[in-house]
Image 1 (cartoon, rainbow, N blue to C red):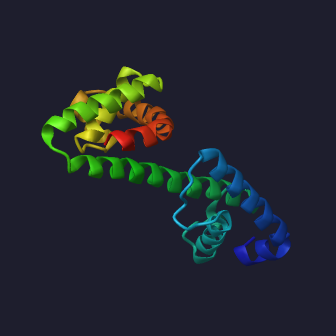
Image 2: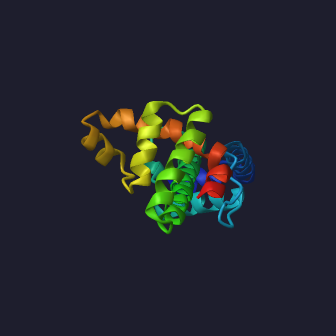
Image 3: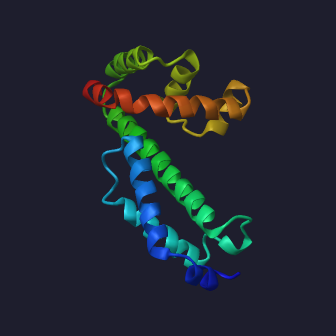
Amino acid sequence: MNLYDELQSIDLDDLLDRLTSYATNRLKSAGLKDLGGKEPFDFVGDLLLKVIEGTRDWENANCSFTDFMFGSLRSEISNFLKGSLVGQTQDLLESHAYNNQDDIKEERQQVSELLQQAGADDDELMVFEYWMDGICKPREIAEDLGIDVKEIYRTVKRLERRLPKIREQAKSII
């Protein structure tokens, strides 16, 4: 069945309502306050446009159109959230760059202590130090440490879950 036939055969209003509800719940659970002017229905609209334009290719997928839409929406939101976390971390790093060297060491120590208080392990602290040094790509960090990049990805995931907990305190330090 092609895309046009599929869109004709489903209750599109119901699907869009369910997708919007899903997007709302996913974004609320992420705890991100600033969505860059986007609303949950914007994610759904953008996704539908990508499907129609062929950027998201349902016709080659091995699942129902509904499953494809939910999976794609999950991916779109995940990519947005990941980009937001990276952007917020970069904001911290940029504000950090304007301070003098003596203050930088003290501030890094204070932020590391905040991370430790939030439950960060040694691996997370190490990755954060790389970030503070401007090295943000997991592959570069893994190569420098001589470990598998999958370990760095796992550590980054844990660290990204901790950062929102200390973000306001870290901004006040930096």
